Each structure stands twice: as C-alpha cells, then as structure tokens.
Amino acid sequence: MNFHKAAFKAAYGTEAQLPESVRPEVSFAGRSNVGKSSLLNKLMFRKSLAKVSSTPGKTATVNFYDVDGIDLVDLPGYGYAKVSKSELDRWADMIEGYFNQDRAFALVVSLVDIRHDPSELDHNMVSFLTEAGLPFAIALTKADKLSKQKANNQKQRIKSKLQVPPGTPMVLTSAQSGTGIEDLRKLISASVSECAADVAQ
Image (cartoon, rainbow, N blue to C red; front, side, top):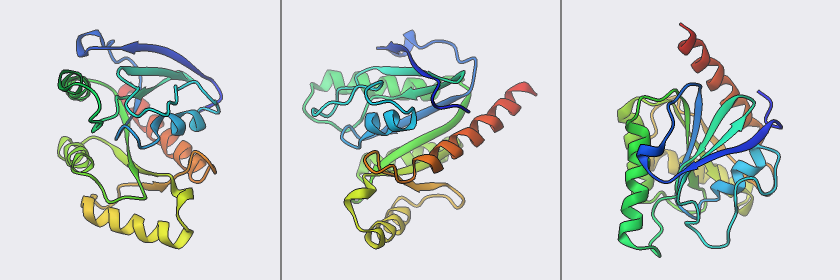
C-alpha cells in the first residue's frame, strides 16, 4: 500500500450523505485535541492534506481520503465542549451512524493522548469497538512529549485502564518525531489486505 498516493476525496456532514462502502476503509477516531489531523498528514506524507488547526474540534464532517485505492476516514473529534450541544449531538450522530452502517471496516484506529489517562469517552469508544467486534488498534499520540521509559509505562497503564482485549495492537506514535508511523502504516496495510481478501470471497 503506497501512502504517497494520497488525495482528499470528499466530506460529509450527515449520516445520510455517507456514500456506499465499496472498498476497505480505515477509520480514525479520537478526542478533538488528540492530534488526529497531524497523524493523518504524517501517515500520508503530507503537511496539510488533513487540516490542522490550533482550535480543537475543527473536523466537523466525516472526511474521506483516497490512499492508493483505499479509503482513510477521518471522523469528527469527540469531547470538545466549546461548540453548541446541537453540534455535539450532530457529531455523535455522524460517528454512531457511520459505525452502524454496513461498511468494509478494515481497521479502526482509536487515538488516545499518551500524556493523560483515558477519558470516559475513550473508554466508551474502546468498549463500543470491542462489543461490536470491529477490528481496531490504539494509537497513543504525542509520544515525543514523554521519555521513552515514561511512555512505555504509560502505555501499560492505559492498556490496563481501557481493558484492551488481548492481541489488540497498541502503537506509540508521534506526528512530530515520526515515532511509530511506519509501524502504523504496516499495520494498516496488513489489515487492508486481510479485509480485501474477505471482501473477495
């Protein structure tokens, strides 16, 4: 899978607008300030394909990116309080609506800021993915902000607190230093290949 071959595809503001799922999708979900756009740009060898803002919560749509014939899906960040309740409800409906559709889920990447203990919303997301039986991995973002030892300790702490199912990949990442980015690319590529094989059967 060639991550250099990346382009913005489309943005959708409601569940009803979402297109039919016809090829493997890799979805990214996380809190509004977790560094999702920065991570996506790093994965796709771009600086500003996914819009990065100093204001959390700017991703108010479900954004699709074409990466070598695969869809990378950027879901709205959750948990940001400085928008109206109706807007928060719309985001929640979009995220829930997306996951409730019959889609070719290759992998869901759940992003968690390694510097902090998981929030209630992080717990809810991991619980949902586990109960739904969706293939998922956890990307611990901003690993460059901690020493290597502290990052590894925090990784184990988060794994325990989230009650992550055995075998679930957890990757230390940093959009700044590039830590874990190649590991995440390999994980995504393997998941996409597996999903494509299932779809072909």
